[in-house]
Image (cartoon, one colour):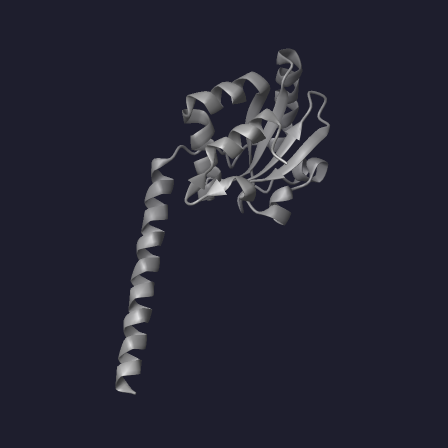
Amino acid sequence: MKKYILLFLIILGHSVVFSQNNTTEVIQEKMSLPKPYDPMEDGDTRITELLVQAKKENKKLLIQIGGNWCIWCLRFNHLVTTDPELKAILNKKYVYYHLNYSPENKNERAFAKYGNPGEKYGYPAFLILDKRGNILSIRKTEDMEEGKGYNKTKVKKFLQGRLD
């Protein structure tokens, strides 16, 4: 019986240490990545401004919903803004915006207008609007995730409008 208790304590201790190391890794990763969300920004006003830009540039508006608290949000942003191929597609087709959702700013007016797919799918979630502000697509990222990041091929298909 003592052997089983000892084995249980060793396993429990190992999982606690692993969990703490994993948490530390995520915190360090968050600290190293750019913070694209502005928690103080009025998302509804900013979307209206960006729709004018999208119309002028004949692009769609890609809205990434999340916050600087979300490691998956930061990872996606980092991938599409640092990978040359993905960045080129993003810049050609979209005006890219990060709509903040956090305790300090829930952007209720924007979400009342467009909905908050993050509540349903998790964060980040995406809204793609045409240049008039009509919702063309609502996407989750779960099907693009791979390991501790994103599958570049799937992200590329998403940006090209071919991820189903």
